[in-house]
Image 1 (cartoon, rainbow, N blue to C red):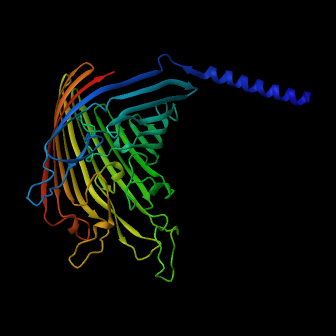
Image 2: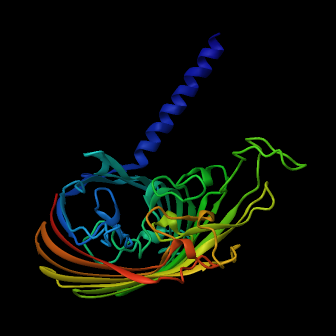
Image 3: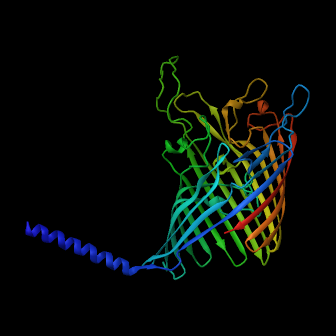
Length: 441
């Protein structure tokens, strides 16, 4: 008994001594909690009804024309609204070190989540960053991010004041992730990791859902390389997402020899890659940047896309093909107190990678197309221009932005064998004027 008690006391003393040694290596810097945020109010005028999220603040596109029996376009409705739900609060955590390892973190939220007519607090970012400096050559470093943060493809935003910050002409997504970054040679950086869709979801037969990845057992993957100079930044990378549109049967079929009941496992899968390039140049008060994405699907990045079913002959393994598009933006900013910004965006529908079955008229079935809930399969192309003028007086910003978004629509019931609208092509435009007042905390 005495020997056992002595062993326990010895082990406890060893743990206590190790704890003191660890504390001697831990450096707690002063003011390591840095709160930040802003109060933001916006008023918006639109010339027609549009597809938008969160109280019409996250803007996508004007709705297509739809005429009633009197020949009137039912969506030609001017509207005016005002919100302050984008007020944001956050805290940065820095200053913790254990030997050569440094630890930092971020917690951020806003009131952007609309619950009926009530704005609720929403989690945006919550992650921990772990850094190791002095690896290999003295300037090399390695970092690891764990938690929910910006998707690497969304980190570089165009110059504007709207809340969609360029979407759907620029990827927009934050997700739970495990992201690794290695900086070397002074200006180069490799980034790779895995993500899981949470708030920005892929679409499929059951609508938007995380289950396509959850039951697919393959996380979303990213890899990229960056170069950062004194005035010039270049970045290239690719996002890979592998989905199981069905992981089990949802209907009974006793008509075949190999009959199946509800819940029979199936082998559906579609894998899509979204490569991109980004360029940025800064010189004094002048900044210009551009990004281009060759999107396959891309709906989980808030791009206009998805995928389609093209072969359902095998009830245990349907075959799918991605909807492809090119998505690009170019923007610039000049000035400080009086600041002028402008963004131009362009999206073009390139259709499916594999052709789809068609009827006797050469039209595919629209029910076989799974498209982003923010978009429409009848979109052929989109164009946006957003000139902005802002007055910055210290922490106070007053800005006015004009948004011209024009969409070329076709008939969704008459898409060709590559799901591209070719009939009754017409343009629809919305003119949006937004006034913003923001006070940084």
